[in-house]
Amino acid sequence: MPSTENVCGQRIDYDFAIREAFSEREEALYDSAYSEVENTLAIIAKIQNGRTDEDGKISEPLTLTEVRIIQEAGVHLDRALTVIEALEDISEGVL
Image (cartoon, rainbow, N blue to C red):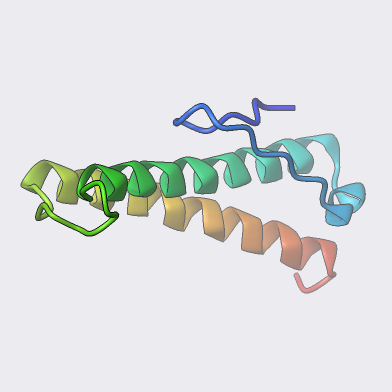
């Protein structure tokens, strides 16, 4: 099983019943895709938190670097969500 720590070092613990229908390879793909989703959310949250002041209000505009990081994270997010959707469809017998 892959690490359940995202890029910000927080622990995420999922226990999906759907995994029982997967082969070991499918389960590994599913876990990896969920890890990628969590990493993407953590990256975006880290950027957002860096833009806020002590009152939690956004005080800084996005930099070009941050925009590019979010765009790249979005590519990974899209791929991960596609994998999750495909595996869930397989487990439900859609394909």
